[in-house]
Length: 187
View (cartoon, rainbow, N blue to C red):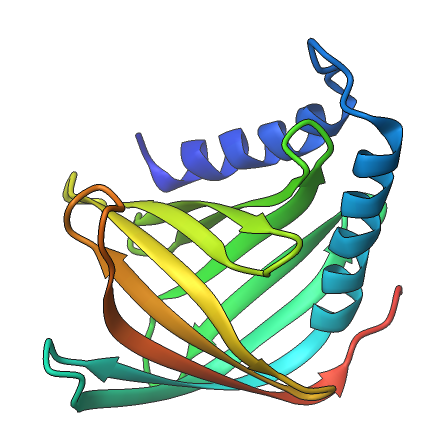
């Protein structure tokens, strides 16, 4: 499967999924509350962020750092966010589409990078924790979790973890520090 096919499938899922009717309708109040929490997350993320990532070894020591930007903007008539991640000094970059799924009461997003790797992620609207399955272009797959550890009006820190046993235990593998550069708008 090539990257263009993956990106097309991702966009197709994003445009079709919100219109699909769930087999059993969740309680309206629960869906409305979860949707309002998702909207608050989207509103907070809008704009450009300077990011610094620290890679950790198995002992928790920082072994590498890199910097870049993450830019969030509205897409699909405001029903979703587009996220573009660029890392300074690297040719590859990624793009994601994030949308709220009323059936799952979670934010779902699909991220594809220019190397052909892709992530399918689900974000809990109460904790902002993201769990991601990752498939690499070489066929390998991994399980990741992103845990929000600090959030202010213009900064947020995320602990990135990887599971080697299907999610039974997690190893802290990276930190991400985000600082707002520019607030986003609806336009």
